[in-house]
Image 1 (cartoon, rainbow, N blue to C red):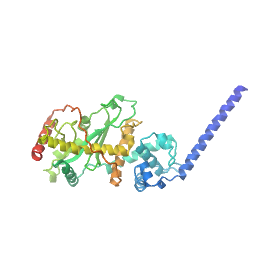
Image 2 (cartoon, rainbow, N blue to C red):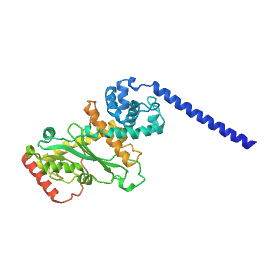
Image 3 (cartoon, one colour):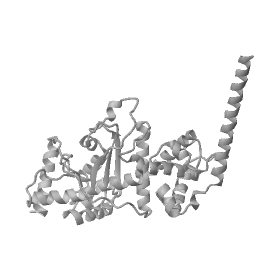
Length: 363
């Protein structure tokens, strides 16, 4: 009899638990149906989603054709807003899913995260764009020349290391020089803190290696070696820090230049201008804290890469829409330990190109 009573008691507890879950889901659905995030006011809305309601509505309409809304499912606007909240706050899925403005189960949120992030990534070709024609390149060169004092530069390059959870496979490929697991994200920015180009790879790859095997490097050499007829006399460059090897298309500061020398004046201009890309990193990570240094993405490296790219697309989208951004820091970093340069023809030509610029504009 005791065994039967215990069985019945367990059965009753299971029924109670199922009823509780059913009521909880019904409560979530009721709250979700009654909630309207667009009524919270511009300032609170912006704190939650990093944009004002009008810009969020425009983004939702851009993504709507790529997302599915089932009759009894989560509306598209709440799918998008919940993912924006996650990217902005960098919190765990469960916390975002329990938000009163878009309550849903953690597994439900995970499903929509894996649908909305790829939808945002598909907008990359529209919002992350390197100068495509002579007019755009010349305008970019003019903006950089105002700071550098010489023409031809059309971007500043650097890498950053967003942390990820320890991968289950090939874990060693993601250990960076800080001994953290991360991706290595190469970015080219302009003078106005826009992201012009992005490449995402494993964290163990150093910046030189990422650049040397990037499509961006091929693009720069294509501009140098096979220019359009109208640009036959134009030379274009990126600027990077001392961690990169000089080349005909990538200018770096001179190491240990004597104060007051032409090399010093050139190097000071390059360092001060190149810090725009570091400042871009700072603004980007303030807006989307899921990639900030004190956060870690608890996903596979592949999906973590998609999240990073999605935040880059959204960052540029916000800038294109005129959203105010955090004020960038005005400091610039100098690598404490110069990396050994890889000596080849590119390196030798790069030194000569740099020398000619110094003689023509700083001597």
